[in-house]
Length: 537
Ligand code: FAD
Image (tube, rainbow, N blue to C red; front, side, top):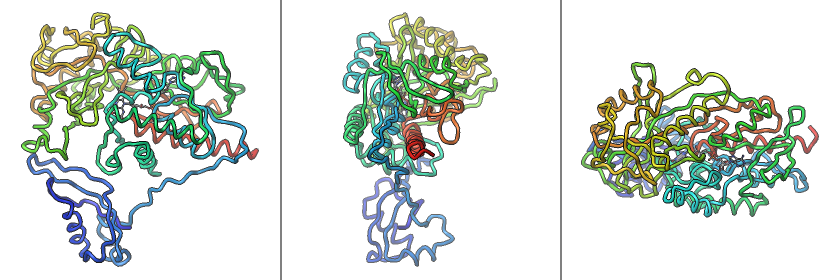
């Protein structure tokens, strides 16, 4: 097959124009073209009002050899890379030992799926509830202000990204095309096949719920076992080798292979691991607020008169500003046409995040606006960053009035150093509600100063970004894990054999796709190690 890149067509082109573009580019006749498929479709919106769709196409042709020779100097005509996923191992039928996977977020789910597909019959332990019961608790919290610390936006089947925008892109290097395997499995589980080819695909929260259930059924049908409300409370290590785990119920499960995919909010688990001597260190993360604007402001700026075009959907943005005080402020986890969500998992602490439905048709755009911080800002124990997160979340809870209302402030008031008392034209979407006031004490002074400098700078790029009525809610603290549980080349902890720190919580992923990719990587490492152990190598 041949791959053609940079095929540009007008936004409103019809399908026949794709074939015409292929024939023109390759200078072949329709008889020479056997078939084509779209590998990727993105848009080029650098000129507002003149937006192009840009395709990467895979072509089957009778003329492949001749064309490769003819276009050998053209970087836009190449042989199609082989992205087929191939399993690295197959468990022998009589294998008695089973690996444990802790967590059913995207990392644990994909590690579990791959291990099941290779015949290793994983035991998957999840502290939260099945996604259906978890949805009742999470939406219940948003409406009734009653937080279940074991079943919420962070904990439960599907992990942290279940109630999210379901953005599925990542900038991690992926030489083995694991990302393609993740997307393919999501499509097999019911995601729209368009996620395989559109640039920056997203799934939307309700669809994710169904996909997670289908993936669970597949793992179980392959001999895997998923146990909910099974919080791992202890890890047994003998002479530097993992031997098993103890659950909150007191049950002990033995295994020499434990994948630790607990996400960035498993603070009690991090504490236990530190006590058990598992090597970890503090790592940088970011803190800030959610900002909400009318989606129409963002669409107009990005798409001009083409705003609202169905192929383009709701516009997103990505912004960064380097401040005079040396800090960088950037937008993070932008959710077009979405809502701000209460993402707390600990009583008396408050944290925001964002989600949207597949249609992205809510009236507000939201995004985190965050400041990068490093262990120099929280020296001391490896868990000092986590302690800082907790302090900021407690302060936000107090500023919100102690009822899980989020503290909020209008952008105009925030920039002009005055508390907010009444809402303007933008209605905040955070549930259960927003307590207006002054956010200047909710973050360290350097972070407040940096965000005050960045918002007007962002307005230069998106006119209206600093509009008076745009609304900030806080705080955003769980942008990534505050720790890294270091591992070596073979994915095992650097001082605890058989422990495979994985995904976002261990500091090896940031987002759904990269967590899924890391799950595959770690499953392969576990499978190879188990085969070696079985063969006595
Ligand atoms: P997690 O998804 O956090 O999963 C960890 C799992 O481990 C949890 O289910 C937890 O209950 C379980 N667990 C923890 N401790 C234990 C224990 N001791 N015993 C047993 N089980 C345990 N990313 C994107 O790419 N796109 C988005 O649109 C997006 N939106 C988001 C919206 C929200 C509201 C949130 C909260 C996050 C969002 N993210 C998004 C981030 C994304 O969800 C995470 O990066 C991703 O889920 C990390 O995957 P993970 O498997 O490493 O960890």
